[in-house]
Length: 117
Image 1: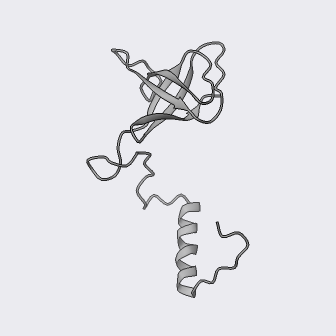
Image 2: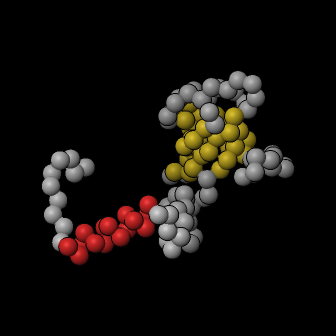
Image 3: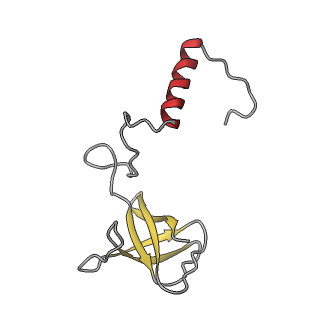
């Protein structure tokens, strides 16, 4: 982290940084989309795609749960596909039906990265 140290840019470097910032803020479609994949895929760009799933009960922090994988539109996958994932972040409270979760594979283990509120 830079903290409060001053950083000196050449005029050319400052222009490049400004152009990249403006392109990002304007939502430039000239850049490839952000992809959430883990390292080690055959294409060199990553490993397994994130998995969307549901959990039927409260998932406590620092525990492993069985997640039922679902399609991106929220529909069930047939036959049912389940996987185990670890929650390192916060307890996900479930009441009134299952909650959607998003998990990614890191080093061969599935980890929770987002949960339905």
